[in-house]
Image (cartoon, rainbow, N blue to C red):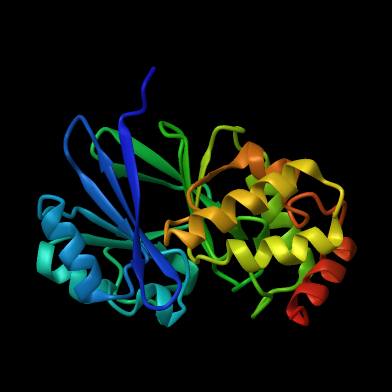
Length: 244
């Protein structure tokens, strides 16, 4: 059955993505992590001028800076983690892991994904299936451990790894090309990774986003998603942090 959801990246700031999600049956629209008011508003106006929900994955300014203004302009409700309510814009809906969020005729599950920050959440729409994972899982990488530790990040990635292979992974940044360079130093003989790196280079040469990406593709190419345990992930993350 075709998905009732349509998703598109909105390039903002230097290398961030906000994401637009539309539910076909009702026309309801959500935007994820709208840090840039003017860029997101311009995109929404070209897209029909409707916004029902603002979904926030974590508290960093490059994900939330425009949220309150964008929501005010369209009368949208802001959804974010109850645990982080003290450092997010004022929330209309405060959610915890295991809760659901309704957009038109569809719902998202709220997944606990700490590691980059403590309080980071992801939104999974099974009807897509589509995952909005902020700065937890990147294509061919994972987020820096800004507040959390390797054990938290490994646990988060293990939770996301349980989702279906055809899940569209919608990350918060266009980091794929640099992630590919590092991943090839870890797993240089991986033909799937080699092919993905070539695809990414071609897309970026055209100025085209490398996202979203299928989770099944990440399973066979992303060394962080494949880390056997938290200790292995810690080694990888340390290596990536110092990688030039």
